[in-house]
Length: 404
Image (cartoon, rainbow, N blue to C red; front, side, top):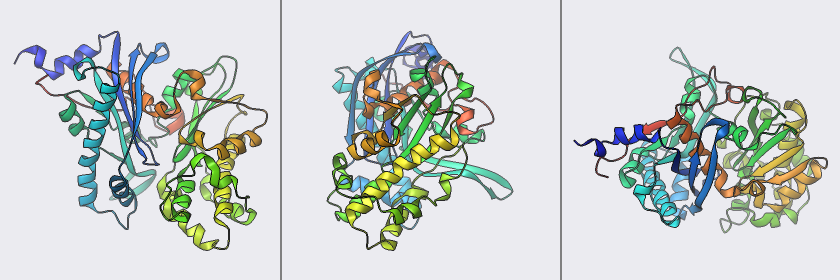
């Protein structure tokens, strides 16, 4: 076999490239679709420079989204469903990669690799004792071998598991990239993502990577989405622009119940997910407080998202941030932004767009940068955030096709 068609040779050659074109793929806890970005990335560590060539969000069909949400629920999920969903999402992720390459008006052979986060279906960050082993675990699906087969490109995927193997929680996964992109010598920075789950990366002014604090603050859009879906009987899947919650008022009795959730008192490192704040939890509250008007329920769970964020700052950060940089789907919920601004009147609230990064592209860009560090052989986790015992290189490599 000629060396030029050897995928291992091509992979090794990537390390010597000055600029790499990388597709980043991400599907978050909201499971809306695949966020895709194609970026040119140069350098490594704090010398990284990037240029976004194209980005797009490709929504899941109603049928696919229903299957994914069934996989989330232990009462509906089965091993055969997880098995075929893994390959189905691989096909969908591969299509998203090819589409964003086409959108950038490039050919596949002009792209170097693909970075795929996959879709988290279950996350168990707290250790369990099983068969004499103390185990943490997390599961992201969207088979990278399918992506490699359909595109012909090498794929780096399954980032979280190596941090978990090293004793970490595998999240928040964005802390390394947040430090590279947003660190400041003059100001304390909080990078606040509001996806299905909300998470913060706190970067003290002039601080090193070892001083970064990152953790999940609690629910983001997850409970809001579940309530909207219930109250509109499936006609809406989220609170468009926050209009529904703006019609309501915060109910103090429901808020008091929400504020008793044990996750709020847990100290970092900590992560959470659909297992704690998903549809099951939300529907149980709707049934318990069935007398509350839908718009008041929505206003209350929206405020709960915001209160979890601000309470986390007060309880678990060494100082309040000077600047909060917002990203994720929650930035489009005007009710969240209004409430957050009122709760943090002394803080300068900014958005990813002010740093040249579309909010809808940030998580996919994070995957691309993490994959870039894998090629460079650079550790890309943050033990002070995840609780891992040591720095490790997160990401598994699947080689591309031999017939380029």
